Amino acid sequence: MFQLFRKKAEMIAADEALPGRDTPIPTAATHHVFDTPLSNDVPDGMEEAMFGMGCFWGVERMFWKLPGVHMTLVGYAGGYTPNATYDEVCSGRTGHNEVVRVIFDPSVVTYADLLKVFWEGHDPTQGMRQGNDVGTQYRSGIYTYSDSQRAASETSRDAFAQRLLSAGYGAVTTEIIDAPVFYHAEDYHQQYLSKNPGGYCGIGGTGVTCPVGVGA
Image 1 (tube, rainbow, N blue to C red):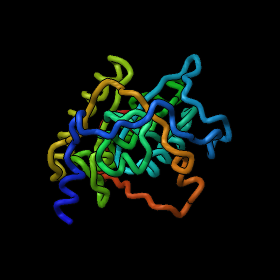
Image 2 (image 1 turned 180 degrees about the vertical axis):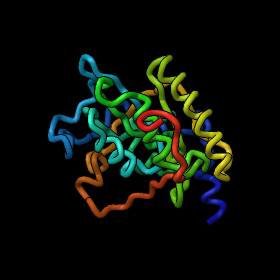
Image 3 (image 1 turned 60 degrees about the vertical axis):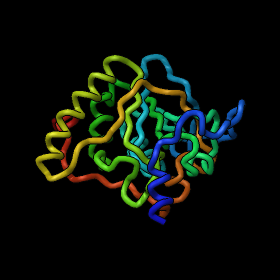
Image 4 (image 1 turned 90 degrees about the vertical axis):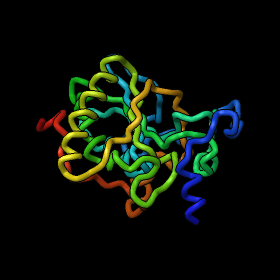
């Protein structure tokens, strides 16, 4: 069992990844919470963000609750396998992370506000896991769409890392990279905890306050 967990927590090499497929896998047509078409488009005046914080069911709920968030979608990113399925991602043979894509109105909710939810909503010191969920698809990650997002992410990481150390936590393991291709997850994963209010959510924060965004 330990060997299995260790293997799932090791990033696979690109030449060993599953081949995937040329066409996207089917996903939902409508956002279950907003009751609008589930769309990857970014309307004029809005911006996009992408985060990995562990199981994407609970993570997506954190973001769809925020005023100013126009759209949330769950999917896979950061690996090698095009149009991967959930089973393939869970095998540890795609390199993908479970991520949430957020489309938001920056005049209502800022990127710093999103970062505050990100840092406080999970434990970014755990490496290739989050709580009892073990594997490369549960790693902490911020995937940036601009130089300003990259700078804000790195600044907030450095500030939060100091607070975590003071609270007795280890080093931050969050990867901060340019946003890779986002692949939609299957229909049943989209807004899962709206469709299944009593469903599993393994996400939990550290209780340490991040000095960015609201209340900074």
